[in-house]
Length: 297
Image (tube, rainbow, N blue to C red; front, side, top):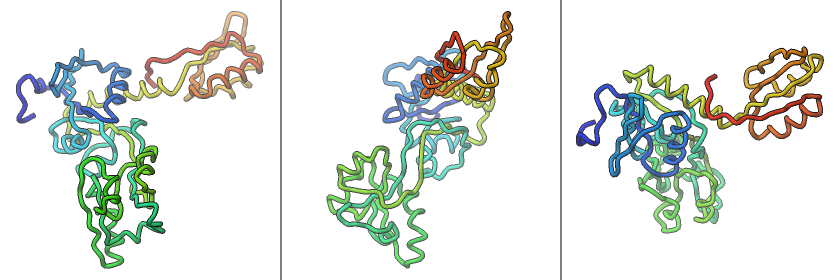
């Protein structure tokens, strides 16, 4: 990558993997990479780190810049929000959804204004960190009404803009809605739903590594959602208990020396205790639950 010192650069031939350097996604991404077996050593004050035993260079960047870096080929793959990809207007391959960082990009207006429909804000002043998406969203209303919505860019927090008289509405991310409500705002329109995603440059040379990273992350995500349940059951009761534990795809059944059956299946973590109770009532014995650290499906 241009402009970097030798200590802050990627060895030739490595797959360059951009991840958020701070913020709401940073800790989640580090936890996921660790669970997927992608470990690294990062020297203090450096924005790159080399993966252990893998030809991968992790590049720490602002989440808002990652889609652009991936799209322009400065890095091969990256993790950022779907909203960032759409705002950046770059061509990238959407490899997979990651299931965290979920929120909505919404048009928000003061509760006191009692806005009845987002269309009534066309031609007004909008403050946002997402000017491209905001302009695209209001364009049909502008064309219909013959007006021009004034989209003003502000980096960072935009909630105060209405209270300060700088805007008639804002476009910003809403996760829990706590910050929005504290600012006296309410959602009057939704632009898109977003979450963290894995993206790749369409011309990336490291297709094999991209596929391996995807498999590892998929395995980790499965392990966070499921546990393995193992139990014994009489052969004549097998069909009954299989309905209780159909597994993610199908259960594994083996025959015991006494003619009974041993069954193992994945169950969702939130349903584990309930399923163990149902199996016990159905006649299963030796019911065990085992946590997963990773998987391959």
